[in-house]
Picture 1 (cartoon, rainbow, N blue to C red):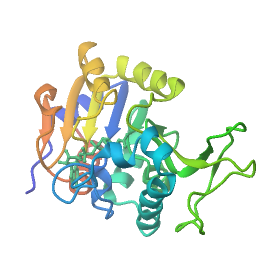
Picture 2 (cartoon, rainbow, N blue to C red):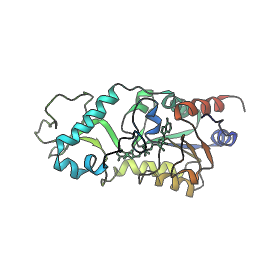
Picture 3 (spheres, rainbow, N blue to C red):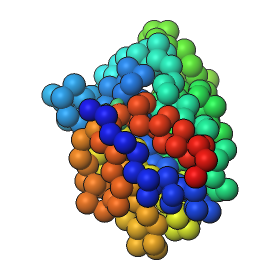
Picture 4 (spheres, rainbow, N blue to C red):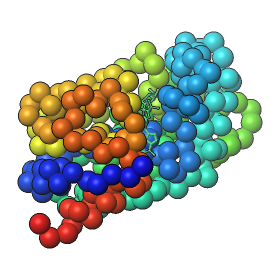
Length: 249
Ligand code: OAD
């Protein structure tokens, strides 16, 4: 299904001083990355608590690492799509732009977005769970056996992502809140809005007067608060949105 970009949304973006974009796994779907919920989603047939919680890691770190190693290997073959690329352009077209993402795949950065606020961390980084607490990038996929990988200090390494039951990094979330508080337009793209506190950022922006808009081929929990909805994929809708913004008013 394809749908025109609402003129009101283009107008709002033209006038906006500050724009916040919140992305979810849907923006990476056209790159071949599975989403979490719904048909074919990563959580279908799985309980997140069996794979993405501190408890699961404590119980069976090899199993949890098996899941992350599989995702990393899949991601290693994925490239940014037209949706990611259009956001790089959008950043250049508005005075103040903040890109918040729930994705851990690093595809926004690969497309060229700078200063991405990664609410849930990054799957290409690993963190020591022992005394040294060191964190570093490791892009090997698959990881060389044995799993789970260990730090030079011999403690277990874990993916530097946020698991269910864990708090988001305070600095990261404060930045996201500050940006949402002053946003004139808050654009939610490819997210179900099912996970807190990320979804609360849309409510926060709305409560201080932002125009909330959504790009998603289906409805989401954020649809009810959106003034503008584009029911299409991010890879199709975002280039059209940017083209409309760049064309003479
Ligand atoms: P979900 O799987 O919950 O939602 C994906 C959304 O993307 C749905 O609303 C789809 O309709 C939409 N979608 C699918 N294909 C799309 C496309 N081509 N273009 C645009 N939208 C599309 O994923 P998230 O909302 O990202 O957290 O999930 C949020 C968090 O839940 C994730 O960060 C992860 C997960 O559990 C943690 O692991 C902590």
